[in-house]
Length: 105
Image 1 (cartoon, rainbow, N blue to C red):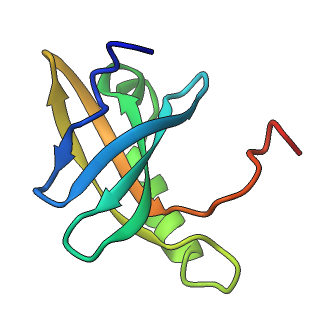
Image 2 (cartoon, rainbow, N blue to C red):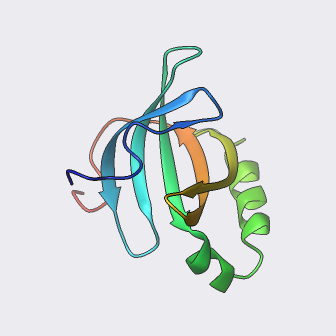
């Protein structure tokens, strides 16, 4: 995607988006680097319009964070809201885990 509006974006002055990993019905997932500690992250973007149709999305984030405290579950780092080229998005940041996608399994 030559004009991907997220590639090159830096969130919170530390998460630099490098490339898109995959996209689906709900949103798109990107590979990013935490430039402050040189660590790999995954960032999912979901359009705010779509999120507004999902009730209690913040409660869902809290549940994901609680699950992440268990062994074998990817670590959740943060979530927030961002406007990119006039469109509003919710983003969620997790550790990046290399390997096959669920589609590939």
